[in-house]
Image (cartoon, rainbow, N blue to C red; front, side, top):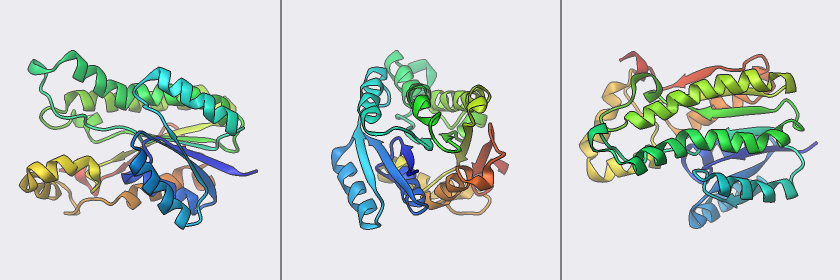
Amino acid sequence: MKKYAMITGGTGGIGLATAKALGNQGYSIILNGIDEKQGAEAHQQLSDLGIEVEIFYFDVTKEEAIVKGFEEIYSKYDHLDVLVNNAGGLGGRSRFDGMTTEFYRFVLALNLDSVFFVTRAAIPLLKKGENASIINFASNAAWNAGGAGAGVYGTAKAGVLTLTRAFAKDLAEYGIRCNAVSPGTIDTPFHQATKETNMELFNSFKNNILMKRLGQPEEVASVIEFLVSDKASFLTGEVIQINGGQDFL
């Protein structure tokens, strides 16, 4: 049976690195994104590697868009072996005393609601998969509440930790595992705005990492590759820190 892996927010950064890693392990890739230009570039990169890929464009912050997107996925695929809830982001920075309700709800929708709505939609396909596995994305901010202005992001990621364990409990009877990765500071477009506006701050990030360097997307993808494999068949409800010792300092 052909193996299928779906990755949300998978047209760049860690998502695309994960698509390449899983594609090289024989998975056909189902990517989700919202930027069609970036999606076309990702499709080309994966195709050039001989990886079978299809992209579905819908906004994971909106329940209605997810439901509609999965109607199309249901019509084309009869099972799913891996779901990677990679979509997420800081959404900007705002301290609580000046935070708008719109900003608050957007950050929660992007980082927490999306994990619930996408996973709920994918469960019928995962039940038909072989040794199916879900991977969610946490963050150091789930433990330390993030830096200034990132409090809602940290709150959302803390919710992802609990949701991961809840999914693990709820889906174990179907043979579906659910784990999370918690990347530290990874050199991806996530930090592009900081690079453009405050390069000194960006360069200082490595000083807060025990290994004195930023992580690479491929280093996160390799852990995900392990977690969805048979080598991790007795792991569920776990969170793997990938931060070069950043949480020690």
